[in-house]
Length: 262
Image (cartoon, rainbow, N blue to C red; front, side, top):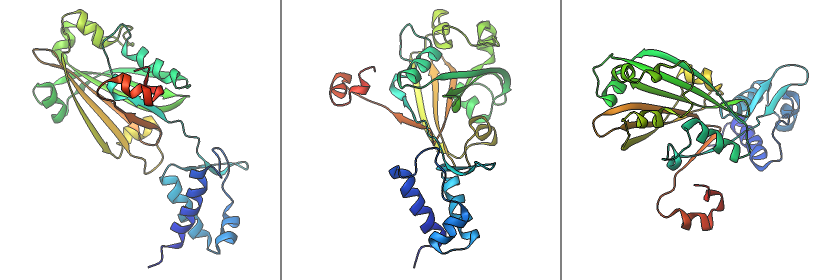
């Protein structure tokens, strides 16, 4: 059975975008032009462009100089194996350095709130369901576009002992190093990766186009006695690339020089 006409049109435009024939920031042919090119109705053209919008390839820009524009895409490579590696650099500084190393500009917005833990988070932290916790949230921007959001939850009893966790501003040395300096050395991590559609909050914070999934990197950090935090990094699926290396980094760097910094 023949593929619907709107999908054929979308496939043709998609190929031109992926190949670079239609460059970032360039306008697609107008609706009348596409109608003439493919011999279809206005509704069929709109169905085709709506499909590309849902895929995050184009966006509708209002105004006389607007139209359907090929989206500018900044893809950040997130090195999962480098996350919170031991060393003198704070987590935020390490993230900022990685962004800048890839030639982009980094910025972030920070917020602190007290939240009631959902059942799955309470289970990860080994506390009673609906316990209170400190939530430290960072929205991270690459070239002024939201790229990811980090939600980190700390048990309330830990925050009463480590009052700095209740600071309404970012902690200069990073929370992992702060906790270690106070005797809460995280000696083990449990990482999870989950792909799904964003919640309304995530879609708003990340400004994701309709139909764009997110990838979650969930890390539970443990001292020798207990779990002390859960960090959930929510990555916009259309502007992030996750990599992880294992084994001898010198061997990998021989064939992938860009990994030498790891």
